[in-house]
Image (cartoon, rainbow, N blue to C red; front, side, top):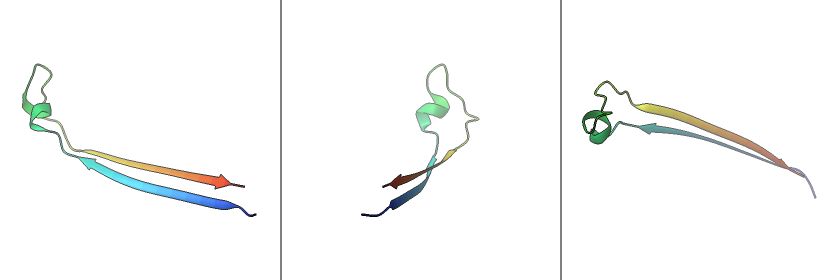
Length: 45
């Protein structure tokens, strides 16, 4: 048996919806798109 190394990287992007921008009391027309990045590394032995 040996070692196993795993890595994962992901990126995401989300535009504000019409509801986020203009509906309800908490609406905010100045919202910008959201960008995200996630990474993980695992080592099994």
